[in-house]
Length: 424
Ligand code: EPZ
Image (cartoon, rainbow, N blue to C red; front, side, top):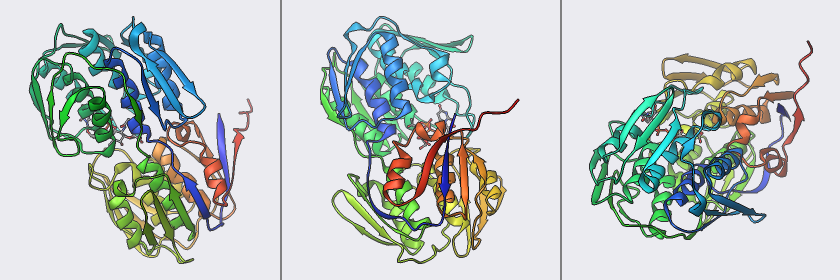
């Protein structure tokens, strides 16, 4: 198991390019199962979750080819198995996304019930209820979700809670249903919009993407298409916070600024001078210490829960006291106790963290617990005195492409080392 070693104290300075969005490429790759020919997906990030998804689709019989230009060809014509087994689902919860497409296109699916994870219990009840509303038979047997339907029928579905992959699963199921479906209280994330655009490029008839109401007119079949995945707004936000926490000057390129309005507003509140172009964002702290900034997470267009850990880290060294409230997941403060090991002054009460900025953090060995928490720990290591070693860095490899190279490009003193062998 690798770990990442950082020697803090360097104000980052430079330019970094942004990869394709993890949370768009995963549903888009799965959606390619819905059509009757090959699809070509470009701007694909090199991430563990992409590799896992390729393995999942390959095991079902789809043929996949990836060229060195971050472009994947997925041809579902060899599909012969409609299962997502536990050994893959336990490493990537997003495997649940195969449920809708498999039932819609092949009439059946067996998907291991995703367990909980570090950030919460993460039930999938809304996914299952949505499929049942479309006419599927759904049961949970021996830890597996078993779903089947001869022909899905359009339905009106109202989600009690905004769910990103729930919206994506039901949208993918409804595109081949007989008749029209309406999804109310739908997720509005840019990644959901990207998936809808991909599906429409395949011949689906989806309207309202980006609003809280989606209308999907079922069609007979879908054809393969070419598509380029949108840039990753969470990766973008993470590198901007890296510039802010180190009092540096960072420009992120090949991104989509309009997806980060709430993050840019909060960074300006910390005192960052930010310029925005067509596909770039330039953040300059002018060498100043960031000011504490309050955050309350919410579904898009609110402040992204996936940016919470990064701003928690930023506030640990900011001037003043910040209140961070996590409204989306019930246990998304796993990074707090690791930040406390570096000397952070944070108190967690329920879903709220009270952070009193300290003048400095001191490096120590710490442990990653989940993808975005590990990003927050790396950011803290960039500003802590001395050396910080972040263990279990496989979490970070799931969602950040070559993070140590990109941060190194910005001047960070960072390297990946094999974890010291546990002595008996
Ligand atoms: C997606 O997860 C993202 N993952 C997450 O990113 C992200 O944090 C999350 O949306 C919120 O934005 C992917 O897109 C692959 P939800 P998802 O369903 O869809 C509850 C990352 O770091 N809920 O929107 O699983 C749930 O418990 C990952 O890239 C139900 O109660 O999240 C949570 O409290 C982490 N029943 C809330 O809804 C359900 O059936 C939002 O979850 C489904 C969800």
